[in-house]
Length: 202
Ligand SMILES: C[S@@+](CC[C@H](N)C(=O)[O-])C[C@H]1O[C@@H](n2cnc3c(N)ncnc32)[C@H](O)[C@@H]1O
Image 1 (cartoon, rainbow, N blue to C red):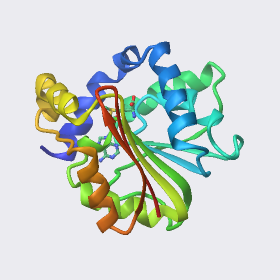
Image 2 (cartoon, helix red, strand yellow):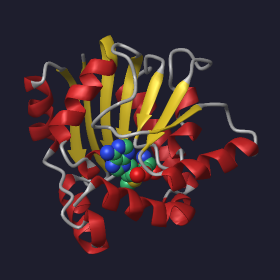
Image 3 (tube, helix red, strand yellow):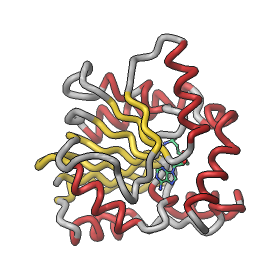
Image 4 (spheres, rainbow, N blue to C red):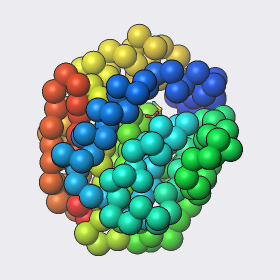
């Protein structure tokens, strides 16, 4: 599956994307960030940000709530939904259309990178891991988060079909090991039916 096909798939789903995350899930996300991920170092890169659902959560869990949040996604349609939210008075952010395999930033730019519900969609995960390592400051966090375990995620993608039907998530402990081999220090690995969390430090 090409990057363009993945981009087109998410472009098509952008207008209805926010319906998938209700206020109950947003509250659950706040709890996860506060109890399991601690305070995020800033600036934060929201990698594969979609329509910006994490903007409701991140300002409350970052060490400097006034520092910039960069929202990056390959899908222009997903990003355009964030613009509508900004018009409604949400906190200002930097929106960037870009590819996680080739991040358009200088090295050591970010204190934290979050990949929320995004990692299985990368065509070459190792390349993205290398890119995240490059743009993180020493001591910076990389957090991969989902609200389901890897089996449920893989089923979800198979049932969704189209460009994401083969998108695969390994068990969390495997991903943590892969990140360790790439130079990261594992901090948290948790996988249950309603959470998949791998948190590492550069
Ligand atoms: C399942 S959605 C999650 C969006 C958002 N994080 C959320 O949870 O609502 C996956 C997102 O990853 C983006 N994406 C896929 N491949 C990407 C890539 N190579 N670089 C940047 N974004 C990508 C898609 O466009 C899509 O918005």
